Picture 1 (cartoon, helix red, strand yellow):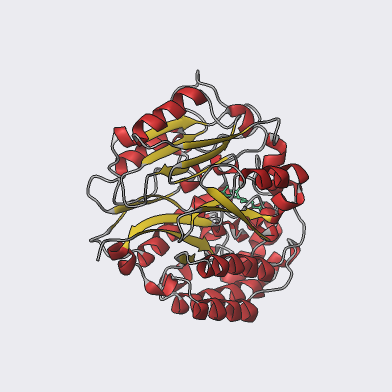
Picture 2 (cartoon, rainbow, N blue to C red):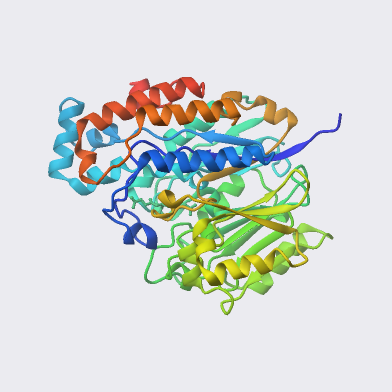
Length: 448
Ligand code: SUG
């Protein structure tokens, strides 16, 4: 039987402390919804519904576990002492900003968990993973060690999978993972072109950079990931984000561009030096023509793209070979964006269909459908080596929904985060989850 190849989407399961704390300067939705009440239960269920729908469409769909929050270990590192209850109380009362940050369920956005290079692109033929250090935001910088342990537990077989330590925790090597990484390929099993998008040069301040909001990813970080993964210069492209769009709220490239196989769907203002860079992508891609689908500002403004997440859509190759867009309902609700998408699927491009999903709980923190998933291209043998308990099935869908019903609160305000009971609830939920997903001990409270 010939080898089959898949792109598997591993979606982040929203954690029990999902809340809106306004932690992400440069992320418009995070700031504008700061202090609103959240619903961890509906957030988790919205995510699960998307996973189940993609599974029903015939996609291979995986689940990525959330992190332990509040993060007591970090509070201890920051000098809060006593038993867990004391640590929590002291932090919440003496340093509420720090406390909110260590409660964030931001690991749900698994596009930021890691950069992944499939075996077809790497020198040793293995699938390489590097967790993102997420240095730009304190609450996100707490993620790489746990993300690394979860990845190692999902992709454990060293014959197929290679895991690297995250890059040094410093702004010079600020790395946001797959949110700034796009892979084009003629099919998932063939060597592809890995496009690394970055916001600034760390060691050369004479180069263009945003002036209002931070550029989270550096050129030097992207180069380091490509080196670690054993990528070939002939198959990699480094593409700078337009600093002006970062200043308009495009804090990750996946807010302004998305690619899959032979399609790059992007906004005309997304990049610097666009024409030359697209020519380089085409030349490295080979003879087959790449469909560069450029959305003009006159069709959809950057503000509309940021508000609706038109580009934070999943561009998926369906089992019948056509491509579909998985879009948030915000795109359907915006007349300009929905008109654009209606017209796009009539055109002669691989994109044939749009499916809309309600992921509003995540959108309110600036996380659309594409933020919620980490893509891993795998062949049959590699897929067979993945921990099978994390692959979505009808049974797992029911089990995870029941688990959410049992452990998650319907509503959570920023003030509720101070409730010591939330720590107990969160730990017992995660302890049970590691058994459902057969992850072993991945959380600090299970390891200490
Ligand atoms: O890092 N929001 C996340 C959103 C990440 C979206 N991911 C991708 N584009 N791939 C961030 O800015 C907000 C948390 C808060 O405000 O409570 C937050 O972390």
